[in-house]
Image (tube, rainbow over all chains, first blue to last red; front, side):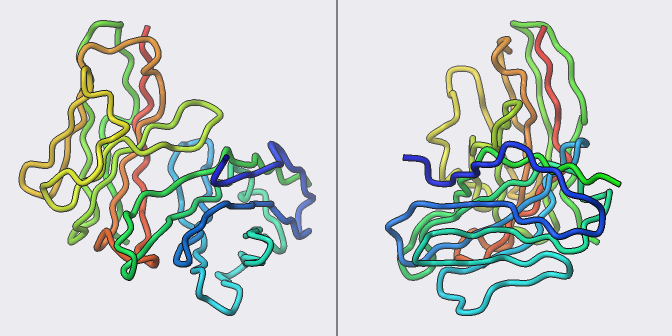
Length: 119
Length: 116
C-alpha cells in the first residue's frame, strides 16, 4: 500500500483564491511527522510546513495551513490568497517513528500535485 | 540564510561514463541525505549519513553507486558506469540531528543528470 497518496495530479486556481491540496497517509506508528514541500520548475525542494502526529492544533505558516484530520489520516495543505509564484509541484511527505520509538528519519514522498495559478 | 549547496546543477554524460556529484550541507547539520527523483515522481532516499557513517543505504544500487562523507561535512555521490535509467534529479538534503519527528530536512537545488 502507498504510504503517501496525493490523488490530484494537477490543480488550477485563480489568483487571490484559496486552494486545497489533498494528502492521505498510511502508518501504524503513533509518532510521525507530516511535511509539505514546494518544488518550482528550477528543481529545488522548499520546505513549507510541518505537522506532528501529537500536535493538537493545525500548523500554520503565513499563507500555508495544514488541515490535519488524524482519524481520517489526511493532511491537506491549504494555500490562501494564491499568487502567481505559487505555481509549482507540491509534495506531501511523512516520517515515521521518532525519539521514543527509535525510528529512522527517512522521508516518504507522495507523487505530487502540479498547481497552476491563473490570472 | 544557510543553504545546502550542490554542484554541478546540470550534467550530461554518455552511458558507461563515470559521474560525480557534490553536496555541502547546512553548517552544523549532522545528517546528510541523497535522494533520486525520477521525472513525475517524488524523491526516493538513496543514502543517509549520520556524521561520517552510513545509517541507511538500502536503496543504493551498490554495484554502480557509491557515496562518501569522509570528514562528516560535505559529501560526494558517484555513479560508475552511468546507465540510461540513471537520468534523474539528484537531490541532497541535510537536517540538524537526524532523529525526532521535528527534525526538518532542507534540500539543495539538485543536480539534473542526463545520460545519453
